[in-house]
Image: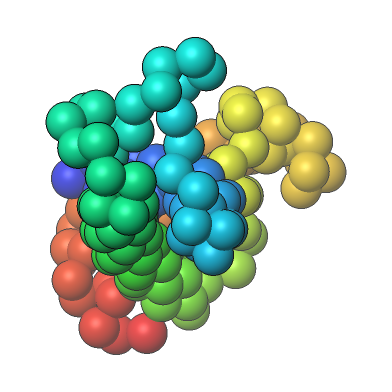
Length: 155
């Protein structure tokens, strides 16, 4: 696998994680606002404290602290994913200018919009699967030649 393909696969993963992390943050913030830590049914023990503390106030404070840490971690991960996708959008702008706009669209549909297959990309673009492969290969060849950093910086 080429350097460009490996990097774009990381973008694809990050793009998928953005929606997941956003949902997680909303759920965690709701739990924090309600100040009700999640507990397994019938356990009588707080997951955040492992059931060690019998004082409900202390359990709730520790649970809230655990929620705060999980929210911070999820926000950090979300920022990292958004940053990577932002870099990819700048890279795609360079692909559009130096290779072709259609080649840029092929990469965007597959790696950022997360089409399931290259055939799906072809259907969305209204062209043959072989054309999508040709456009993808042109873009990847250029990216491997100039490098990811150059492509991002030259946007």
